[in-house]
Image (spheres, rainbow, N blue to C red):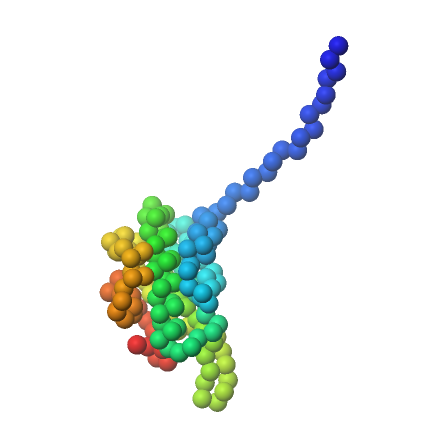
Length: 154
């Protein structure tokens, strides 16, 4: 006679990942710029807006900083345009340590771009990595609003 056994398996709990967490994970994987960290990703479901903060600790000079933020922005936008049903508006801002004329340091915002996803979908973001001219021109031409801190402005 066969002996009955009781199954005592514990049910597997699957954590539901939010769209914001999914985006942050994808963006960090897509970021190819060494030294630029994606510090935070905030998604507002009501406005369908995404705000992304970048941080760069070590900077050789102003051009290096601009290029690093530009190339990271291209990587980010290549991911965001895959979600036009969830995203309407994008803001990407970057900050870095700054030193004033008295030697005091602070972390300051030095870069910000904004665009709609409708405009962003018209750009081949993956190919902009090959843009062999001043990448700040590509940034200026592909965002509705572009701001650079006076200390790093092209």
